[in-house]
Length: 127
Image (cartoon, rainbow, N blue to C red):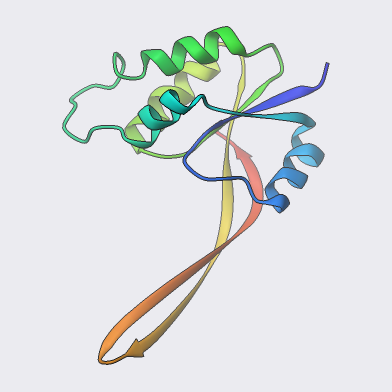
């Protein structure tokens, strides 16, 4: 059975990331979060003292949807990532994040500085 990559982050995978996941992680299927769980992950409230209860719906989804050998790409709120990395590892699953290079271009337009950052995928790194 082919590994799945569960996407616990707020972006869309680039074609380069998909290709790398297939080649380096042995992934055959990409699993995006259901809409309500994506909203939950992308909007972690900054005022919460702890995240365990808030993230329980995501944990339940991962617990019920993954199989041995699956991989979870985790990026986002630092506290949320920490909680989910530990949870995913406790299930015996592999947790990864994407590394990038960044190219920054600055230009001045009408006295204001505009900054454009371009990110390019490099590798998936294990947590």
